[in-house]
Structure formats: C-alpha cells, structure tokens
Image 1 (cartoon, rainbow, N blue to C red):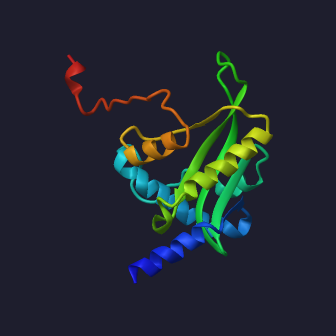
Image 2 (cartoon, one colour):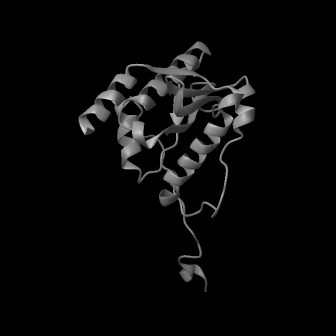
Length: 173
C-alpha cells in the first residue's frame, strides 16, 4: 500500500507544471501563505499571534515587477513562489536583483523536487528580465531550508542579527 502511494506520487512528479498564478488561485494561495507563516513561527518569536499576512497576493498577480507562480500536478496546486525585481544597493555591482519569496510546497510533496522546479521557473523569468542576481531570506536556524537552497546553488551572504532589550535589562543603570 505505502509503495503504491509513493509510486503514484513519483509518477505525478514527472508531470509537475509551473505556471503564472491567476486570480482563481487566490484562495489556495492564501492557505499556502498561512502554511509559510506556520512553518516560520518557531524561528521568529517576534511574529504577532493569530492570523497575520506577509503578502498582498492579489496585487502580486498583476504587478509587472513580480512573477508569482504555482506548481501543479494535474489540476492540483501543490506549491508556490515569486520573484520580485528589487533595486540593489547603490554600492554593489548589479543595479537590480530578483528577490524570491513565498516559497511553499504542500507537506505531502516536500522532498520531491517541487521547490526546485519553482526556483528554475523563477530563474528563467528573472534572467529574461535582464536580472543576473537572485536573493532570498532563510531563517538561520532553518537547516532544512538552508540545505535545500545550498543544493540549488544559493550561498549564505549576510546574517541579520537581533536583540530583544526586554530579555536583558542589565544595560540600565
């Protein structure tokens, strides 16, 4: 039985299609957004409790500088991601870069190369826009994501550090 389920999933993996998101995908994408937030909560104690949103998904679908895509097998949407063209800092060699975000794959399809196909589609779109640099954010303790993105060719660059002043008020005299 388990073998049959795995075989079915592997057969589906060969039929993964990555396409531009459309308004009809919005409800599913809102669910995926909550999946991203749920996965990131253990890494970020500063996130507000309850329902929060990271993205304006509807606006991203129509923005010229954003490519929001979904991965699907058959008519079933199983993953998402976007590339957003950003202005680079004035002191770096490139004028713009593609920022990747909203990288989500349904739990039952993780580890099967879906995210790799999404990233490949976003790389192609970015390159066709004249972009030569891609960046994304990963929580420093998220070893699974770090490994996955390293495997795709990303390298760690800058680590953002934070401090909650309420945790150690010893600086007060």
